[in-house]
Image (cartoon, rainbow over all chains, first blue to last red; front, side, top):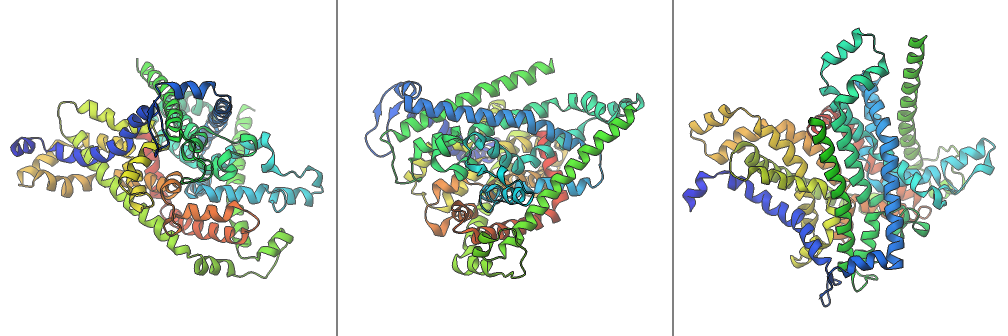
Length: 306
Length: 276
């Protein structure tokens, strides 16, 4: 037995990581799928109900309304990220790549918010946008435009937009840095050829660099999608358990949290009699939503290789 | 003519970038300034210039609220989780990258699954598991959970080990070093630049981790910095003096560390992203 293991030394290296990773990353996925078939709150009696939890999620008015609202907000976040943030990140990365004046300093200043934790980011935007002590309203008053002052963060219609602004401010640098890394890998031959053919500054970006970093772009769009579907902290800190006024900034992960861990706090509070069953059901729907898009992405990347 | 247009567009983008970077710095200064003001004064005369600045808010925070207790908690969790992640991911990656065996492709894919499914979604089964292990409200639960997300690092390091020349390994074995010693003394040190860049990413994630500590740490004595910050920033007007102070005290040290090591950190992240 031992001699057999000696011949396969890789087993020793594989085992510790395999155990921890399986127990805390893979097992929860499988366990969630199984638990979603039960009616259970983690303490009381566990009753097998088949796919009834899924049926309930999609037919119960109360749940469905929250689900639809959270999903729409998550998708809005994703679209804002992909359509606005990604192009800007590429342009900024390109400016730094092209060694614009002060590019080191700029890179640091844009990246720095990344290391600031979410509650502080939210706080900084609150002191900007608060209705009484906020910088924006005070500046408007100073400029004699006091009638334009608003309780900015209290406007449900603007909730997602402001939340998106905070997320972007905090997370802009990392994607930009990934793009920069990809640009640094682009072969210099193509660029030189483009230079000789008098391709301009922006043409070089669109015609030479962009096609070569396509895979990074697709990957980061997927990362953005997964992030939008599982983002929790901004929504929770800004809007509490309910996700703001009328769920204006409710997102998928917060909806999941509210159902699984109750209305008031992680432990105790109001936990429904089916918290585990319905919680894992929502998690499994989210798994599926992510899995489908991830497959699509793998398909896209492989097709390009042909 | 075309050239001028191009130059102008570059200038405009450049200008916008500077404004944005400048905004970040102005916000930092504004926050520092207000963290040294009295709460009542800030609320009544938000924009006024004052010379009555003091470190009172900071003293309150450190003495009354035991700020460094939370720093200690955060550091403990960060250190434990990073160490765990490095050990687990480098050994797994070494097995998957260096050795050849049946089913290797399967295990490589197996370890990638975590990239697609963030911890948030599996948290209910993990919670039940930790409850059974009696690890609720223990640092260990958070350390284990954060240290177990090794998909990305395994992927990066597997590539690295797979491309290391076989001769290095053979020479070590010929010299009589065992498999384990070869790994610890020769192969792992070679991977340290990759380990460094991946640790930076992991560290940023763990340091700002909000969801996992929120669910698993319940007693105040064990909470991490982001949870402390939330306590002050939640009810804005009542505790705004502490909120300013805690923000600055939390941001400034890491900004300084980050700025000093920025070159290595940013280059490390850029490299890590390409391979990921």
